[in-house]
Amino acid sequence: MTRRDPVPSSPRILLLFDSVLQLTALSAMLTANGFRVSAASDLAHALAFAERGQFELAIVDLPEGRADRAGLLALVRTRGARVVAVTGPTTRVDLDAGDRTVSRPLSATHLLHTVQMLLAEQRQGR
Image 1 (spheres, rainbow, N blue to C red):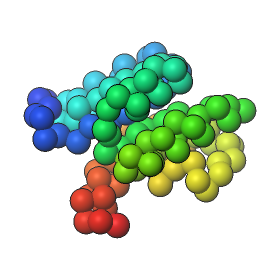
Image 2: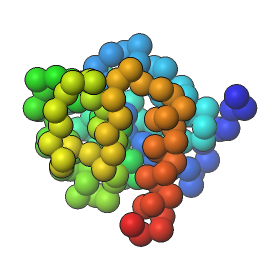
Image 3: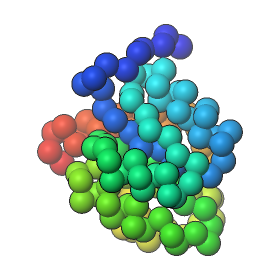
C-alpha cells in the first residue's frame, strides 16, 4: 500500500474505539489513505474533538450494552458529518445509529470502501 500524506483539503474523520489496538490500526490505515484522523479511545475525548472540529465523517464503535454514544452521534450529525457505526455481529442497532453499519470482525478493505462511498455521497449532496 502506498502512503498518502493528508493535505489540508483531505476529509477529516473522527474515530472512536475503546480498544487502543483497533484505534491505532484504523487510524494508521485511514491516515495512510490520505485522511486526517482525530482518534479517541473514550467518549469524553471524542466529544471534545467533535465540539472543537468539523468532520466529514465519524466512525464510532458501538459495543453491546453501550447507549452512551447517542449524544456524540447527534452532535456530529448536526454539524453535517456522516456516521459509520461499528457493531458486534449480534448487536441490535437503532436505525438512527449510523448512515452505514459495519459489523465486527472488521475488514479494513470493507471499512475503507464504506468510508469512500459515504464521502462520495456527501459530495454529491445525497
